[in-house]
Image (cartoon, rainbow, N blue to C red; front, top):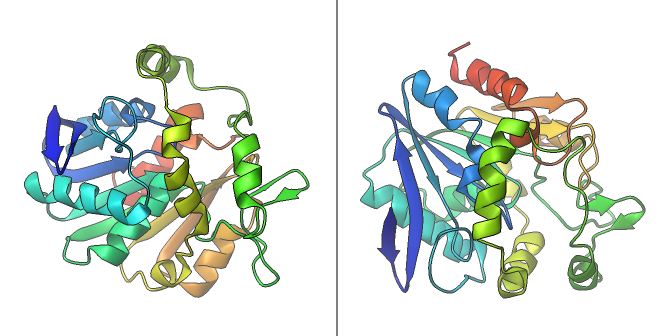
Length: 263
C-alpha cells in the first residue's frame, strides 16, 4: 500500500495482528530484506509493519536528505496507522532511524527496540574508535565524503544472503534499482550523526546485535553501548557480515524470540 506523506508516497505492508513490530531497513535496502522475520513474528501473534524509506524500493517521490526527515515520515506512518506499544527494529541506517525516532518523536509509545550492526557514532576520532572502518580505512570528519563516494561495492555479507530470503529479495531489487546518487545527501547526514546520548538515555528494553565479520564496524561497539546503559542487551553473531537477519534468519530469529520472550 502507499501512504501520501507530504510530497511522497511511502510504500508499506501490514501483516498479522497483535503488538506492532515496525522494521526499518538501511541505506540502499528495502522492505523485502525482512522476509525471514515477517512470517516468524506473525506466527507468534505480532502485527508486522515493513516499509520502504523515501527514495528506496517502491516508495514514490524524491529522496530525503536528513535523518530527521526520515524520522518525521516514519512517525507519520506510525501515527496514521494508530500504532501503540511499538517494537522498533532497525538495521544499519535503519538503526539510526530508530534512534532518530526516539530523539525527535518522544510522543510515540515505544516499548522495545532492536538495532542491528550499527554503531551510534559513525565517525572515528581521538576519543571514539568504534566508527566505520573497512580494513585500514577509517571514516573521519575529514574524509567521509571522499571515502563513501568510492566505497560503494564492499561485500556486505560473509557467505551471501539466505537462499529463501534471496529468492524474494533479488527480483525486487532488479525491479526497483537503488538510486544511490540521489540518496547520497542522506548517507552523508547519517554518518555525521552522533546518537550516543540518545542511546545512553534509553530507559526501556533494548537489544543491539553485532556480527564478528562486519565489513564496517569493529567488534566491541555493543559492549561500549552496554557499558553506558544497562537497559541494553547485546549479542554478537559469529560468521555473519553486515546483513545478519538476512544472512542467518534462523539464528537471528532465535535472538529476536528470546528478547521478546517467545522462545
